[in-house]
Each structure stands twice: as structure tokens, then as C-alpha cells.
Length: 162
Image 1: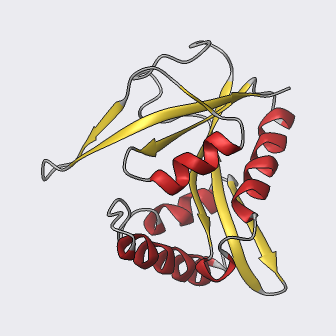
Image 2: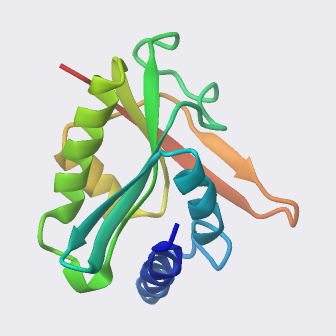
Image 3: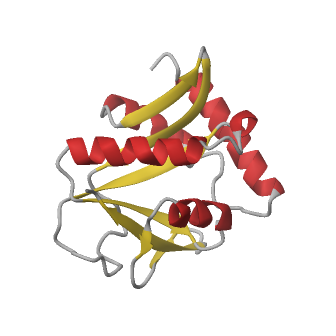
């Protein structure tokens, strides 16, 4: 919990970087305001380089969109990777792929058959990362509608854990 301010700062820099690329899907609330709960529920994984936080993700047992898409095996035991972020100072060094490998290991150790995730349709860099790492797109999409009517169109991706 003592790292929460540094984690939030890392994610705020990621948000600014995404906005520079024209990707407006994260903001001041998401993902930063979910990190404390991730820590409390012991589902946040963090990679550091000495004292610098280089990347983080949450590994969750449910996702709001899990029933909106057609998975390879809808009823299979699965975990969901959420809030994967890489410190912008460490971009383009393979850390995203490294963290996905660690997420696969953790999900398999927890007894999951699949590791799944959702990604917003306009987040092409993330989609390319997931495909490069063997994730397969599920059928359909999850439309996450917010109070102000704003809608995110999210695709589900999964990988069977061997």
C-alpha cells in the first residue's frame, strides 16, 4: 500500500502517453482508483527496477464483460488480466510480453485453464501485444456504457494455459 502513490503516478503518465497517441480510454479515475482495491485483494502484480515501478497488472477472477463474448469454453475456469500498464520510461523493452508471461504463470498456478482479458477496440498497440503473445480474439464484443452515455467497445482475448 505504501507504493500506491508511485503506482498512481505511473498510471497517470501512461494515460498522458495514450492521449498523445489519440487513445482516450483511461482517465483520472480508471485505472488509478482501482489500484488500492487490487492491493487489498492481493491481486496486483508489480515489476520493479530497483525502486522504480516498471509495470503492473491485476489478475481477477471475474470481469463485467465475461458473458458478453463467445469464449472457446465459456464455462472453463479462467482468470482475467486487468489494468496492464508499462511505465512509459520503460516502453519498447519487451516488458509487456514479460508481464503477460508472468500473468500466464500466475493464472496457471491458481488453477485457471484460460487467461482472458478485454481490450478497447481503438487500443491497437495493446491488441498487437496480445496477438503477438498468442492471445486469440473471442467472438462478439462487450459494450461498456457509462452514466454519461459514453460507450467503450471491448474485445475479449484469451489464451489456453498449457
